[in-house]
Amino acid sequence: MESGKSETPWIESEWLKKVSKNTSFQEQNDDDEDDDDDDEPEMSTDLFADPDPLDTFTFQWKTTTATDEDEKYIDITLTGYKAELGQTLNSTGLTLWRASNILCDFMVKHKEVIRSANKVLELGAGLGLCGIVASKLGASLPFYSSGDDNEDDDVLRCYQLIWGENLYLFSEMHGSFDLILGSDIIYVEEILEPLWNTIDLLLSSRDKNANAEFWLAYARRNVSIDLVFAEAEKRGFVWESPEDAEGVYIFRRAPL
Image (cartoon, rainbow, N blue to C red; front, side):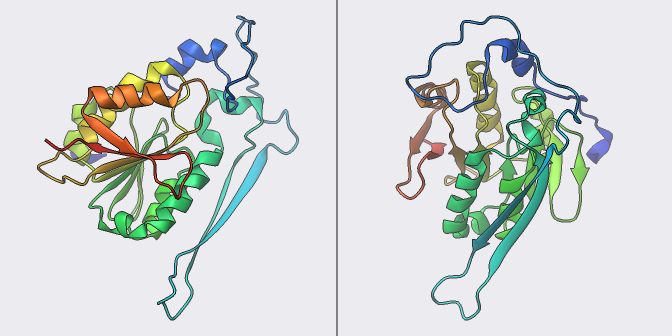
């Protein structure tokens, strides 16, 4: 840990604890029926309830272009828990969600942005797929943030960050970021304010980098994208939806 400063131990977000009884992590459709059951769902804490609870996630992306002489690929294999298992609701970072793959596809298509960013931060990293891909694409100093303990090596850095809390301490320790990534990280309305407070503080300011961006791969669950836009607008952000990536939104600070 840098400068001898410590961060608060944490397992799962307080917002998730408060709303878990009314929250489903299944992706939502507009015509989904409301769940009238107000009782808190039982969440399995027995990791051995399934005889084979683990899953292996394997990905490959081709990173070469037509002008490259040799073909180059990114190959990544991660191990986590099966998404359908109930225990994953106790920590959404135990598995991979579909939106992370979508965001990685977009990152590979626009690898020049990744390479040009001074520092990259993935929020709600979970297994860390997007941060790993950013590193493989040549990102400088890629960071993860999650609810788990801190880890650090020569290439990737993972730090605990509770959105909206101790942000100035985190900023003092790690600085600001030219590119922030997030995939399937919005699942209840309560997290919108702390999420955007986090992005607003940690994304590089206009005078430092006018092109700093937040890339969000959105999956509709319990929060509409319009609510996400509203919180972004309060903090002076504008956004666009690229044509080559359904569900991906790019946010940047509005020009003065």
